[in-house]
Every structure is written in C-alpha cells, then in structure tokens.
Image 1 (cartoon, rainbow, N blue to C red):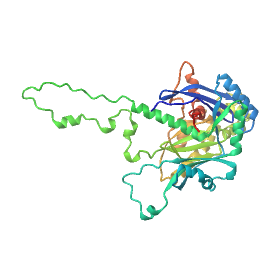
Image 2: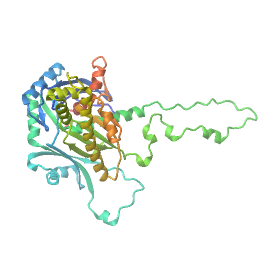
Image 3: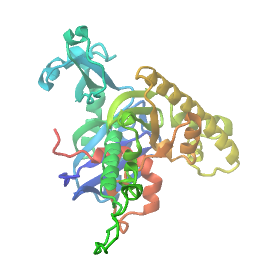
Image 4: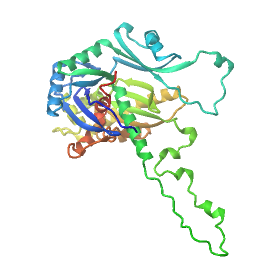
Length: 421
C-alpha cells in the first residue's frame, strides 16, 4: 500500500434514532481515527430516508461536534432509502465523457422518478479479465456492438437539497453527499486492502540453511528423492496466505454480501472483487422488531426500543423480548435468502461467501449468530476500526468494539477526501 494523502473531513451519518460522526487522518499507509462519537435522539427524526425533525437534527449535530471538540467544517454525508436507486446496467461501450452526455437517456428506463427531478451519477465497471480457456466468440457475437457495465445512481434532487440545507443550518459545508451503500463499500475495501497488505508482509517460513561441509573421501551426494521429499508443497509456501489455498478456477468468483440493518430499511450490497454487482433495499428493519416488542410486551415505543437494545423494563419478561427479536429476524433472514437466490438465478449460481453485517440493529445481541443459522452463511459484524490506527490512550476499546457495526457508514464517509470532486 502506498502512503495515503487525505484531507480530514467529517463523516456524518444521520439515522432514525442515532447521529454518528467520524474523522480520520492519514498516517503513512493507514488512516488514523481522530474522532468518533454518537448521539441518541430523544425521538425518531427520520422516516423512509427523509428527515422529519430538522430542528432536532441541526441541534444534535451542533451538540455532538461540540462534545467531540471537532472544529472541521467540511462534511461528507449520505442519502439512503427509497429516494435512491443504485443499479448495474449494460450499455454500448463508450468513453466516460460520452456516457456523461447520454446518461439521462440511458437512465430513463431504469429510474422510477421523472429524470428532471433526480441527480444522476455513474461509474464504469472495468471488465474482468477473460479466462484463457474461454471459448472464442461466434461470428455473430463479433459483429455485435461491444457492451460495458455501468453502476447507475439516481437520487431525488429535493431529498439531496434538503440534506444539504440541514448540514448548512448546522454551520457546516456539505462537500460530498454520497450514498450509504457506497460508504459501506469504502469500509469493506479498506479492510480488504489492509488484510491483503498484512498477508503480504507476513513472515515467510525461513529456508533451512545447509552448512557446507568438506566432502569426505568416499562420501556420496544425497539422493535427489530424499531432497525432494523435504520440499514443502506450493500451497504452504506463504504462511497465512489464504489465496494460495484457493483453486485458480475459483479465484475472483466469490461474492460478499454487505448488509446494513437499519431502522426502516435493510440495504443489501453484493460485491465481487470489491465492485457492486447487485443492490437491493428491503422495506423492513429494526422498526419491525420494535413494533413486535411493543405489541406483545404491552409497552410504549421508547420502552420497546430500549428492550430491543438489551435494557430491562420492569414487568417485561426477557424471554418474551428475545422471542420477539428472533421472530422478526427470521422474517429478515427469509428476505435475505430470497435476495441471494434471485441474484444467483441471474448470475450463473455464483456463491455468496459470507455476510458482513452493519447498522444499528447489528448491535442487537446475538443477531449475527441467528442470521447465520437462518441463511446458512458465515456472518461477521463489520468493524471499520480494525483497518485503522487507533490510539488506545484516546479511545476506549470496549466502546469502539460495541459501536463498530453502528459506525460503519460514518467511517466509510470519512474515508472520502475533501479533495475529491
């Protein structure tokens, strides 16, 4: 990894019940955590990706930045929910400049909003290298126009403008308004780069030094068979290198599911080689869990929210709360299974390797294990701090560990540089 050049910027994640901020700075080949803080709202401030209590959000931003002593004014924040469409599409091959000129025409068939009411963006996906064993193209295919894949992003302009206004009302400058899914991709990519860098720098097994001794008269050279018998197999040549143990034909075929469990929405981003290949927003989330607890435990919404996160409420059975959570998560797991099956049906049966879980509901005790059991896939909690340099004298390790899945979007946003266009 090369040295990182990065201008610190605030990563601001506004959730339905929580506000999260993160600030990073470059530290050689890594990023270092400078600030991270969370602030709970007294009541829900967002519905379906739309801020419903601007005054509470503006005041919350000011309070959180003050408590964290953050003086930076430039912000990267994110829009999410039904106001955003992210789709991988296929178009005739063209340059980036040509794509920028025709994006509105290409987007019309995929975007369910009037084109003049959305902000559009795109990213051209580089094609995967073709395997040597791939069959040659037919004459018909050779004569067909060459295609390319593009990640299309459309966000309702009024939602983007309102988010910018809220940030400005808090005395800050909205430098970039990103998409929450891409912030999670930033964190995942950073973690993967750090993991690969650690593997490359892992200590390789030292070759045994053979002492050169003067051959005595009549002594024979060692047999070739004996020398070869001590040669380690190729897969063991680099200790800790998991890639070396993967058959060549399977490399690059694995898909990772980045799943963000929000209050009203579950965002699914399937990535292959760190590039999004499929996205879906599922209209469910922590709200369903809260409603189930409220109805079955006969408590108000605030008490239900507290019970969901593990806090006790007098007169309410803990076993009943666990049952409510489990039943609701089973429904979410079923939606995830359907999503994966739909993707695999149109992607040649590409396997999902694992799920990386983030979001406020990922902090619910036991959620990873339950979703793993229901989906029959390994599930790990996102930890955006693992790839960062963290000063243990400044940050409490237990707090960061508990907040890790909740912090994923804010850290992913902070990874963006203020120098980016």
